[in-house]
Amino acid sequence: MKTTCSTNRILGTLLDTVGLKGEYRTPEQLREHYEIEKELATKLRESSHEERRTLYTSLYDELYRRVPSHPQLAQQPSSKDTMRIISPQLRFLRRFLQRDAVFLEIGAGACTTSLAAVRFVKKVYALEVSEEITKSLIGPENFELILSDGNNMPLPADSISIAYSDQVMEHLHPDDALEHLVNIRKVLMSPGIYICVTPNRLSGPHDISKYFDLVATGFHLKEYTNTELSNLFKQAGFSKVRAYVGAIGIYIRFPLFLLRFLESLLSRLPRRPSRVMARMLLLFNIRLVGIKK
Image (cartoon, rainbow, N blue to C red; front, side, top):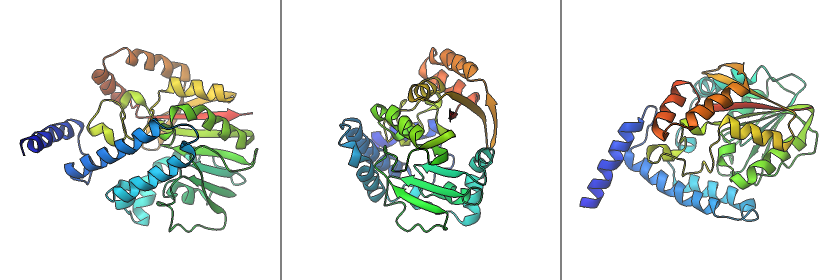
């Protein structure tokens, strides 16, 4: 009993420190989610490349089955709420979307962004690893859902105009990241672009472990900085990489070399003040656009 009370007091302190704005679950539900996700994430971190061909799908399906309070399952917003939630992303994406474009969303989740994009492009492919979260999905004629192993792109080479992912890169095993980017570049037309949105490590962690740890230990297998990720883009063969910064749908193109310089300064600070400064500077998400010529 004393151990349980002590654990609850520590958990309460941690949750008070991080803040629970927008969180609908109890501390006990958060702890349960954390323990389950950390257990499954450890299996992914310790797995081989071959094992991960099936593990991405099976472990995410297991997470959704074992954590019924997971936000992607428990919160079912109305159509009006859904548009409000995704409208900042759409405002950012709209500058890239064209009527004759073929659009691919990688890690589409419940496919809300993909289904919104069908109005602005010729064809939409939504790529997802979890059958559990997409099993009741129905889309229009120019929409196609594809289940994947989380790394391969089961599409023809040079078939996609615009590839897009939001909160995906951090879920990949670090050993798979470069191969993933190479595969994306392969399916892109020339010219084509890949728009990548992912949490910035300096303001994180951003997964369930944000309530408990100073670094990501859940399904965010690796959170990146602009510096680290832009280097990977170059290694994957993208000829140019552009960066954007902003918030709530208002984003401007920003010199990548300045972001890299700023991140180098923040990386020299102790972890807690570095995180505070990164959040003050709105370095919550990385927004990189890789260009294939």
